[in-house]
Image (cartoon, rainbow, N blue to C red; front, side, top):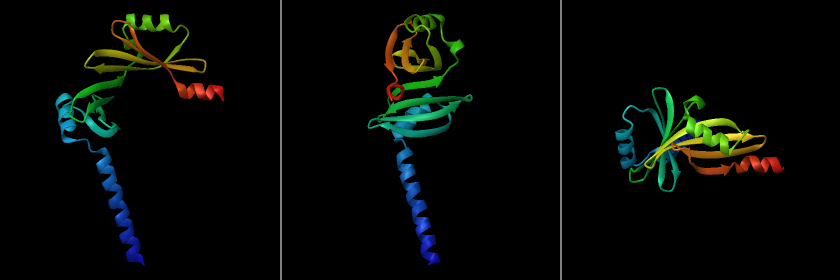
Length: 154
């Protein structure tokens, strides 16, 4: 009986590792493109973002980043949190003009092939909004956080 338990345990551990490595192992083209773009990255963790995209979470100089790549290795986006003080004044002005009395909860800098975008999570009372503003100060996206709105309506 003890032998069966040991074998069963070993089988379950092996099965767990098999599923984990398949899930978290990005395709060779993706890993090569990542290594070329971020040669100094440390502690890289891969996750399947959706059917065609992989996301790497990693550190460079103690800063946490995430980067997305298509299956063929095409880089899509890199993001990392920044301090509010590091946001250019024209971007802050655009945000405060469009959303007076909102508090900034989080700021990320997103780099894409189209350029830089500052992504904000802002809050006023129970309303949370995600706003993206390009480096010219133009709002390129705004979206109410639906989870918080549903809680508000309960």
